[in-house]
Length: 238
Image (tube, rainbow, N blue to C red; front, side, top):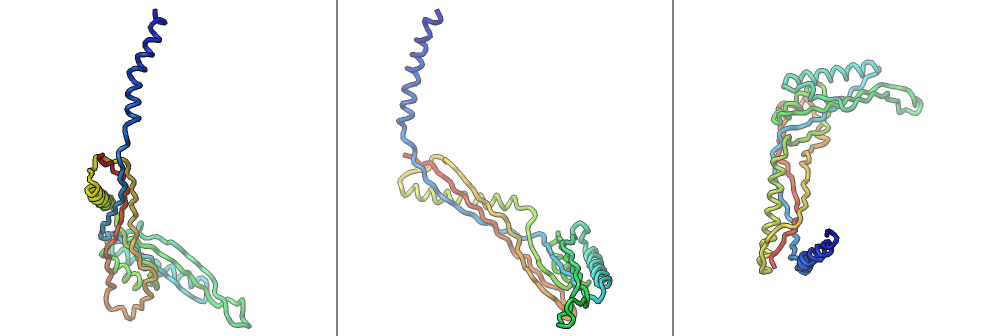
């Protein structure tokens, strides 16, 4: 009995689904409109990073090392007085080397030693950036190698940039669709590319003489920009 009705069931399925498949294949694709959009937002930096240099020279290795260490300690104490925590003060580089005479008859003769120390300070209160520079220079630093401003939380700004980019793409698509006498009925595909906030940098800032430093160093954080780009394929009406 089962074998008798099995071929009939196959024929019935073919009769039901074949017309639907043929109809779907014959359905013309809806037109696609590809549009790019961009958006930009600006944010105010709320933190900074200052890279300080300490270079000391002396006739003996011990003197050069001790003077460098004393200045580094003095700088840390001065920064602590400003509220900078130890975890936000990091030694990035330390070099110690002999200095040789350049005189022809004294080549290879050591005439002194140089110790150099690089300290990076994270300033969580951007308003203190100028005070950090002044305190460090007054305590023995003889170079400010870089000053970088950045933003802690960029998620909200990133979303705003993306929203602006999508709106830009949609406005363009609406204008094009209207000119073609069509309307947007859906979205086929979306890709996005959001940039990163690049810290605003001021490198090789200064070799500042403390004799001339009668006022605090004015430092403005300014603004940082972030750009987002999207590419959207809109579905148009027939």
